[in-house]
Length: 129
Image 1 (cartoon, helix red, strand yellow):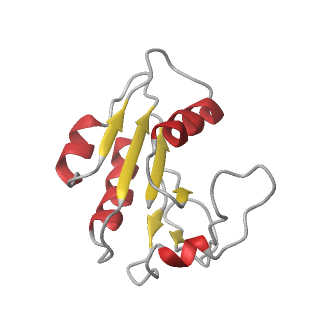
Image 2 (image 1 turned 30 degrees about the horizontal axis):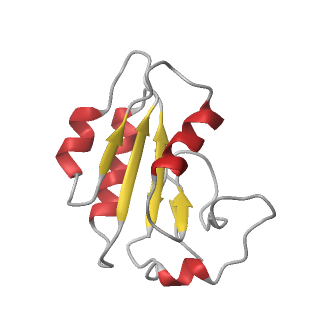
């Protein structure tokens, strides 16, 4: 199972996201952070939370955000695949990754949809359905 986390110039928010992923109890999770930074790299934040099987990618030049998503997805090895933005956190009681495999994907989508049970922008809680 892979979780791709594209980010750009928000290492402070990425820390909350990675902390939430590190706190999960399911095993065999690959986390791929695609850091599309222009001025504020997130390597130190990644290194603080990284576990075995986690990877940190930096494109050779800044990319449009959708291409940074694709970079992370292309590099991810696990199946199923989920994407979270770096300003989201995974709920502590999210079900194991096998639950994501049962979620229908939109035509052409590379990731099952994520639900946002809490309203609003930064800090919303994301859990796999």
